[in-house]
Image 1 (cartoon, rainbow, N blue to C red):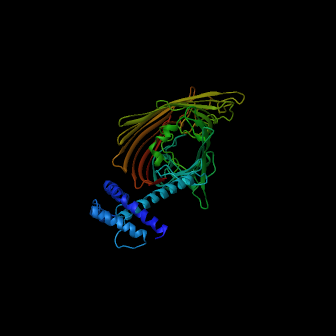
Image 2: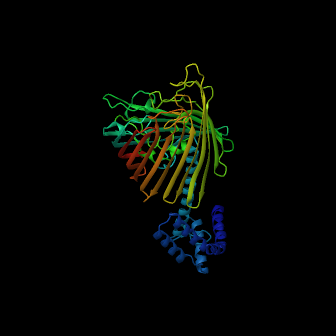
Image 3: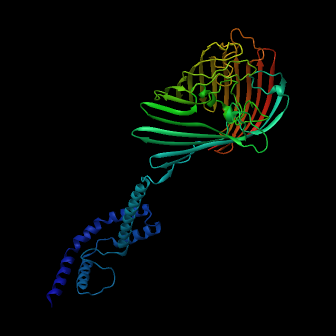
Length: 537
């Protein structure tokens, strides 16, 4: 017998001698094997049938071998050493390596490999997403637009489109200079037009550089009706003549820079501070309200402009908004000064074109929530010095000036399905309808003005909403003035129903009654019915 063969037989005998102890280990591991099968079942690596089959085999073969079985196992090891093939399971100095055990071990190894591969894929995917060249899309929220993330930059696109069929019926009356009612026109009118809002496409870019939060906003607001050149540009009454084109109001172009601890600085063209919350809280933003001109509609209707508040307008500005502390925020800014404008016509009001100082506006807001009650309370101010006033009763050689002042206060409260808005303003030289429209009389003296509106809203269901509102704007005569044709009061009552057909699309039906009264006997009123839709994305 060769030395090599003797070594093989010796090794086999040694392995056989240690077999009993290894069998004991195998028995001790019986529970571990059962646990392993349960884990593989939960992970999905084994079906229930495979699990039950392997467990049955394990329980059948998992008993402790008898001494005879141990001797047979040892003889098998010798046979292996002599390259002798024996039928049945092979024992290598220990317990029988049952096929079910091998299958379970292979499944466990496969599961481990799968876990390692999944982890590697996850790390690779995360690395790819962190790459600045990958564009990601945030989860869409209805009304908040689409937000894309390209590296460190957030790109948001949002907007709205609306259209209404509007029928306006004058209730009669005589012309009122500076009035907003169409009652004196004497003719019914039909129009397919925009409401208080035109259409809008708003692009917002946002990033953080050197610890400073930066934003850039560009808002484009086209109408659906033909545009007409005039003093109010895209807001001038339209021109319903063939071959016309719609107007584009690029009213938002601004940047902001700031931090949470410092606050935010805004530079560019945006909605003004004074009167901004009044129009943003107005439910007629989503409808028509008072039409203004319905026979030749422009980019927008009036809504409640001039019948409850003075239009805030979109004005070039440099403003600062403080951090929000306990719900309180202060905002102040210098804005492009605007001319006094003779909106009433006929030489009834003074005008100006010179400005040595800016317009200054500011406001204080308080946002709160207490249980089911949430709301905002705000107060604002405006001041501007008007120079070189010209009017029919002001001598050409006179250097007449006036300082315009105005204040406002408002509240918007929400409780469950109900919402209420109340707003009041008062000014000296402020005018009515638009900023500094008819604010100063032809004699150069300031006119006082005031107005308010109240609004109630109730969500009948998650989709159906009812709105009712009433508003007034008053313009008083200046000292020494007697202008009987000048508007004294504009007022309107509005009722509307809104139905959210989808997250994007809202159907709107509305009725509005508008009346204008002069300081003399003249008065005019009209009734308007509107129906249409507004889509916000």
